[in-house]
Length: 373
Image (cartoon, rainbow, N blue to C red; front, side):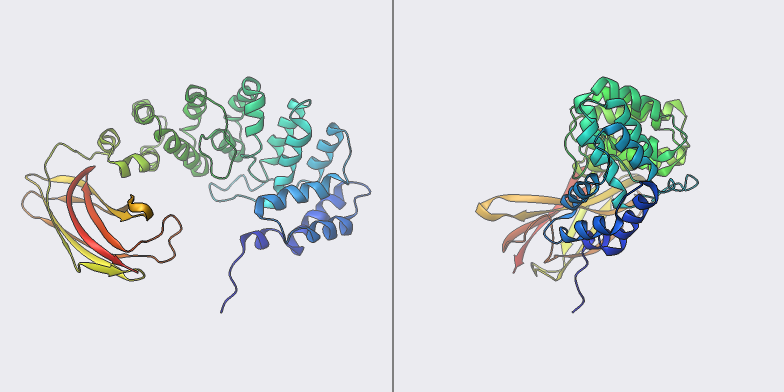
């Protein structure tokens, strides 16, 4: 049997720690690379991914200056060359280069704000400082936002991306940041016309976060960006779809309307399941025939309403197809849905379940089936 892939071991191991040790040995007089590598490696096994970064920072700071100004100089001197500024996307850098961010928060947050922010500015050109800007936003909101407003116009796209990613309200794995939506919007306004997909994806993810609690703000902002015409139309169309993906799953009519899908026309649907029951690990086949009185673009999703323990229910939305219904010709859609036994977001329970087809945000057909374990 193949050994299970371990992300934490892939990121932090003898090779990557050796690289980091060599970078500091070349830049910091007296730095003992072998000592750092041996100490850091000795504490990895019992720690998870983010805890490993904290441990590595513990090992590193033992060989750096005690005063933060000198420490920051040492950290900058040991940084590798910036990530390629000519690229447009997917140049995330290496996790080992997150350590300056950890030490900036530990030693610079309280008494050395400006020097610490300068350090984050340089570090994010090597690895995103999205986790480490957030304590500064919470502790020094006005001053940090002022700095981010400048960075939103920086020539380096990694710096610009940090402005959006670091202020996201629901950044995965990250601590919350205490900002009002009104404080975030001017930054997104600057960034929405960015020429780099790495930045515009972050802006779209940021809007998707906001949409979960304030959908009308998001749809209104996207409309205003369309009217302003500062972003390439194709890129803005992509951003709009990506920003509204959660609202589309919810059938939000404002979001669907912005994407060109009407919810005011009745769509007839006939839904047929291939079987009345399905075993976990197998596929549930279904067929849905859609018709409408006129030509109509449609976004078709389906939801599975599944049983939970204690008699409760939950549901999950899946994409089916974006297509066009002709008034003269019905559209037939088919799908073989796998009941994954290793699903990470929910657990299958035996008993009655339901499949619901949704067209342009409206439920148009449903059918029940039994799940067998």
